[in-house]
Length: 254
Length: 333
Ligand SMILES: Nc1ncnc2c1ncn2[C@@H]1O[C@H](COP(=O)(O)OP(=O)(O)O)[C@@H](O)[C@H]1O
Ligand SMILES: [Mg+2]
Figure (tube, each protein chain N blue to C red):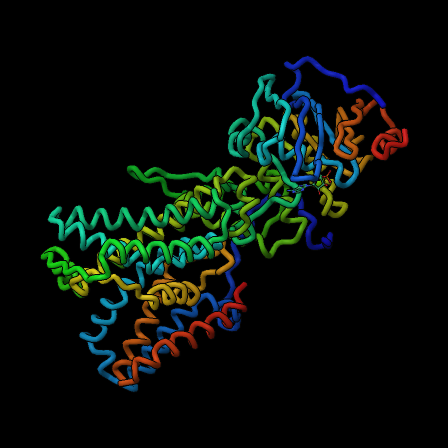
């Protein structure tokens, strides 16, 4: 098992130390250290139930961890709620927590980031501007959507995933976190998402990618962190590892 | 899971035009009828009653109908905000009673009618706020909390009033009840203003979108940074505020503050919301729908009265219509 090495704090955009989270008697993860370097694609892998999603949710303020420290941009900075994380420039594509079915595509893309016009003391939604920008965001990412005024309830799994990725990636965030973004996607859609992640990296956006797909992780990421049964057990440079080594780390056969 | 032929994003960047369904397709779609149940019902009732009893369509009767509907319209708007968050406010009619009693007591104590009205609205808003806090911070189901405040607030009203009606002989309220501007009485204008303000709040503000998001998928809304608890508390407070406005209209209408709950106001507010196409599961709402639903329920009672049907049949008719509407709602998208 490789030792969890530490990089200088100034190089880490998002990091944690000694982080733990329990749900009642269920231990989601314990004493986790993790670092994502600025401008890199950092992958987190592990079996189902290893605690990856819960770790992500703690890092971006959805859950409050039971103990430990979170650092953003070198500063101790636990986010009390997701809004603080978003305001700090972290956008997340959550697994299973994505879109509001009854709202339209445009409303979902701008949810909690609505564009308003001020009329005296009142702030009214600028729906026209949001629809226009929604179309622009979607077309920049080559996402085909018949209408941005459509409710998302009727959309397919792939289209929905595309919208939540578009929301996270299209807003100029410093850090984009994606929890299994291609799990529900077909071959072509997966290729599109991978191209998008590469493009984000070229734009110096830091990406944290949770994935099950070891080949994908080795293709896309710079650094890989491995979780097993609620522990962070290893971290390796992607260029220095093999598929077999990752399998061994994830299953604990090493 | 996903079929690539359908889902594969096409690599032509370009905004597709918005597609609108044709009128005939719209008329064949059951969900269209579900969305417009209250309008269809209202038009149906007006036609039936108009034929059966031409007096129904007289200007004087229509004006009286609108006047009688004003209180229910205001309450239905309050209920709509709560139901949009997937909640329900069972304390609405009790809050109206408490507001009326406080109005009566403050006025009788000689503090002036304006302070009396302001305190009445403040008290009912506080009841709504308390509902919201208990539901969110206390993590108690909305049903249980508002049933509890229904009972608690009723008790408070009885204690404060000693169970006796309080006469309110204010000229301000008398003018509010009987005066009119153009074709409508002042209470009707109050209801119209409430509809307009609520419609803007729901469709044209960030709060409205966050309200629907909270009612739609509360966890997803929270993960995007929406303060879903605050949104729910706001919804219940709005409901309480509407109960306060309804209390003013009620006291103005009958000239006294009665220590009695009008349970049909509560039931009809929920009925109007259902008729108005608002999803009881939250996330989907309109203001015009419930307002027209309230108008329809009032028209039903008014028409049956004109046809000399015994008042005992009115709850039966309301119940039948609401269940029918709920059945139609199953076809909603
Ligand atoms: N909200 C929750 N309540 C209770 N248990 C949870 C909750 N979220 C996750 N867990 C539990 O925490 C553990 C880790 O889950 P998760 O982080 O989703 O794993 P992964 O994303 O690696 O598959 C699992 O045992 C899961 O059942
Ligand atoms: Mg997961």
